[in-house]
Structures are given as C-alpha cells and as structure tokens.
Image (cartoon, rainbow, N blue to C red; front, side, top):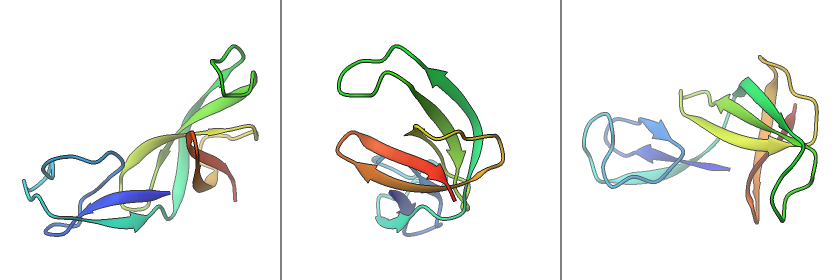
Length: 96
C-alpha cells in the first residue's frame, strides 16, 4: 500500500489531498507503508458485497505517523505489527 508524502516537509497521509495539512505544499510523492502497527479493530459479521461475511476493519498507524484503515480475516490485536497491501477493494492487512 502506498501513502502520500509531502515533498516539502515529509508529512505522510493515506488519502490524497490538494494541499499538505502541515505546510500547505501542493507537491507530493508516494511512499510504501512501513512499520504499521494495529491501534484498534472492529469485527464485522454483516457486510456488503463484494466483501466476505466475516472480517475485521483495523485502524493502523504507519511508522511516519499516518493513520488509515485496512481489512483482514486474521485475528489482529492492538499493538500487532502489520503487513499491508492493496487489492481491488482497498487495503488488506495481516499480522507480520
């Protein structure tokens, strides 16, 4: 999974923005998520198509401080280190 990184101040964030929330720059590069740690998770049992009927949504924090969500069918606990990748429906994670 890729994060957006400000070319001026190196602030990282998950969702693309028109301007950096920290310095106001409009120049960005891409960076891979590294050192992601699970902050919390919610287990879902009734979900919309095309997702499975039983999975969890995990709030994570990347090494640079960016936070985002990923989904998993693995058991993930607060503090677990995560491996995150993208599929056709968004970020997917699993414990390292």
